[in-house]
Amino acid sequence: GSSNLAFWSIAVSFAALVPFSVSEGAVSRVSWSVWLSSGLSLAYLAVICTALCTLLWQRAIVLCSERNLAPTMHLKTPVAVLLGPLIAGETLSTTGMIGIATILVAVWVVQPRAELAARPG
Image (cartoon, rainbow, N blue to C red; front, side, top):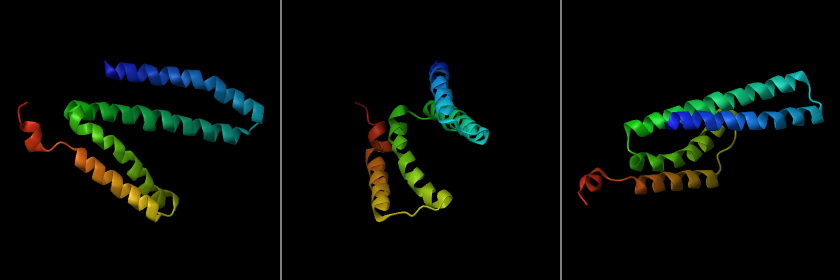
């Protein structure tokens, strides 16, 4: 199913990128601490940000309909913008706040209403 497809697309992409990563490291002659840091970052991205999130997303699709869930994909940008100040000490600009508000309103507007979704036809 879709979990199998997601796994193989991630695995093939990872395998295809490893040689480029190794050659980049060899060319730039980085230290082992940089290699370790890069490897751990890659593992975090692969396991947490890609595999785990893909599995959670697929589980959410099983529990909800695609129609109800699709607009929420756009919520990752406001979450990332809000996490910047909380985690990395970044400043939240007026433009960032306007962008967050715009996305939240847009997601709310396109969410199907229960009474409209229940109507036949």
